[in-house]
Image (cartoon, rainbow, N blue to C red; front, side, top):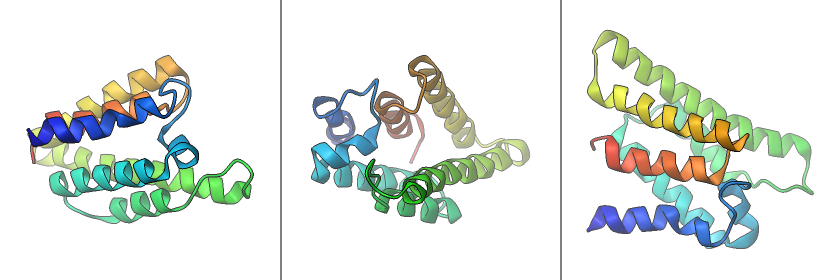
Length: 144
């Protein structure tokens, strides 16, 4: 029951944005409370499944920094690059576990990430659909 509720919350942005052409950050303009809820939910999912590290600081900071088309370009870039750095840092950590420990949870991380990259390639950019599939994959496929 809990996973169904969380899954519903993860897919709620579909009703507020166009998930193929916009990413989750677009929720800031449409529904701020849902953006905050979605971000906290994803951070909680990741912390429950992976050992917190520098990736958590980057992801949280990237989430807190608002993206605004009318805002300064360097702030928008910082928002994006902190989130990219977080995913890279977590991927490097998981790759280390795959290579040296052959951890099943780490292999599943790359499966979920690969599915998200296929969706991003089909959409042509980081889309809300890819972000929601990634978060749902973390919830459903990676053991806590």
